[in-house]
Length: 290
Image (cartoon, rainbow, N blue to C red; front, side):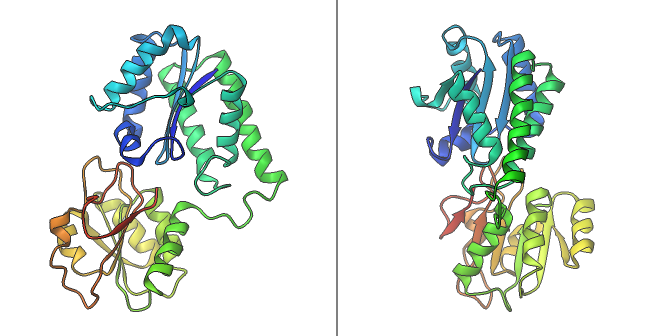
């Protein structure tokens, strides 16, 4: 087995952002790798911190085709793949096991990655790009990930990215009391943020999303105020702390939306947990946490 890994340790955010493939496109990419590029078996793991292509076969035979495919995913942007981005044989398998165990995560021991690996494998099965060798490696990785968490204390006290973002904001803002908070996004990360926020002494919380149904569901569940992402420009002027975690391929919060913000606070605190980024990388000052 081989893996091309582009992660938070060996590639800057801008390039990882260009390589990010939304979940609803991964099956198409796997089909192309198998049918057009000839890879007999392949799994694509694409998260906020990593782009990893696991594949079976000789890298010398498939290397150039894989590089062209990766370049097409980056939409023409140059993605320098050095020798260190490719692992072969035992090092590739060991890397997969370490990823499943949470040892390669920014937050060591976090549990979200194991579910993301399972999702990546499920999509490969759906695309028909799995096979004997990758089946064996990934099923063993699932067992390794579970065993590490059940037999060691690696994950004791470990928080997910949502909880980590809330703790970071607490330290930055000296507490949430009296500060209106906006959560943009109603997916798993948005809900993780809300779960952590309601445990704190917080000001009023608003959740905004594209889906009215999901937004109202979370608002009822957490007893907070729902709104639409269509009103984001107005909402930014009504909240002092903003967490953004949508799957939008475009910027959700632009620099011009922040300019002239009128609330009681002098600063709007922006925290971006999305990939690709939701927040204009140029505004004032903000934190990208993934």
